[in-house]
Image (cartoon, rainbow, N blue to C red; front, side, top):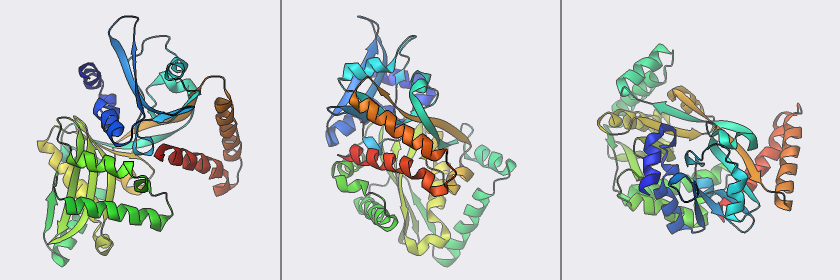
Length: 342
């Protein structure tokens, strides 16, 4: 584990807590089925590590839908082919969804991409805010206006970092489940092990890794809650929700701003908002990390089926059919989500 963490520290791009050995351990305790691959020269020191959730035929990211990043930590060396990893795991196929594009080892197997929206704060909050203003982004000014309005009409805005309130944590989970139902999305917390994972991380007190609950109260009333995964220098935004009665004040954005200000006195200088194209992510982020999705397979029926599915997806997306063109891709993501929850 020491070598693994040292590789993370040597590569800022690998600092995400989802690539930490502690993430692999947490998923294993909550769910099981985690496999760790260590790549090394014959009889030599480890060069790279990678974790997956391996089944009988296929492998996914450790933690499935709960993981916003996956891939290698370290340098596997020249000439490494990911099919070697697939064979070593004893599966026919490894499906990946969020490998950073800089990991060119997997580039030839990518079938598409997305981005993770990141707020980088190397000079602290004020320097970040000044640059946002210089870039013509008014989002932070609007958040401050909403903050003043909330204080006039409801009560003092109170921010709590690393809250230990189990009641507030439970309220966040209840709001997320209600949100899934209202939007017709799969309730990822219904799987059981996913909620256990979050509960375990909420209770975890470990250096450089764990879950942290941040809350915002307006007066005496709980208005917004966010549960994030913490790395050594990166916070990864994860579960967020707010009370509907305070929506006009944008309490979730106020809470994000307070977290950013809080980092000035902390070892954190990056808040990763994750993938998904939302307006608030576009306005707050000042860095985009390209991600890849695709699969690595060995000759097999499983690889043939996946390649055929991507072929249908490419053909549909090339047609000028609007939302209909997106249906195969949505179906693949839905199937992968369900697979990742089992």
